[in-house]
Image (cartoon, rainbow, N blue to C red; front, side, top):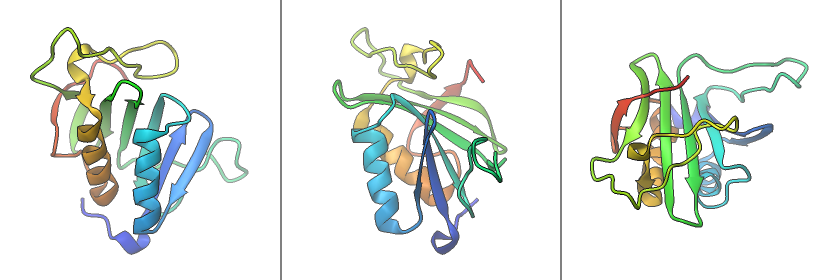
Length: 151
């Protein structure tokens, strides 16, 4: 699925905080926040033709069924992990074939569920995948994937 930039709205949900981006510059800035300054350790990113809405919104909740990229980023240690759910792929976690003991275990959600260590990626690779997802709305091809264990 290729997204037309003029009609795209990227929504990043940090627990209960919704942030939106429509222009290329706004999407670049939102990607920076997701990777470098996340207000929460885990966020969900959606690419749609309109903003996603919380259940707190009068017209909400509203989310696309076209896919979701969950991003766990820890800029202090320089690592992140990804989880993708969408119609063209099974539930998937990012995969690092060079996993070592020094690779951190990162949170998958705020309820205490963690990614497997093998999902941990250097933060620059996470940024590249988030950028690709915001451009295409599809599971990023710039990273490897493994079958997801949760959700």
